[in-house]
Length: 101
Image 1 (cartoon, rainbow, N blue to C red):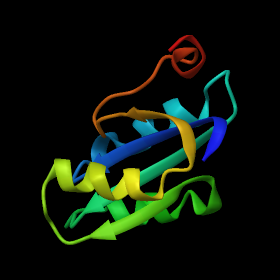
Image 2: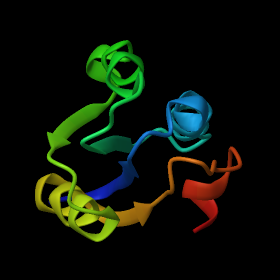
Image 3: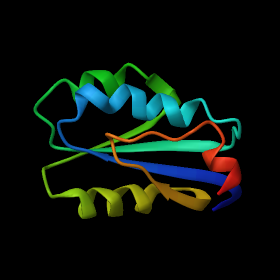
């Protein structure tokens, strides 16, 4: 565990339309000690291509479709942060969300 690190876990299933905005909102936080973990829950749309385009900026886990709770648990298993935040793939953070919370 890394005490000051915030691990943001994003479960995703076929939300390619919103995924980039959600991820970018986390990467653009004022607070920079953040790891982004996206768990793709068996998407059949362009989600994986979008996720791969981020390279080492995010961690991507691919699992067979099992539902959002399972996806969140997979993300939690690899999270290294002392703080955990969950974000839906169709949602986004304001730039100060990680710092204020």
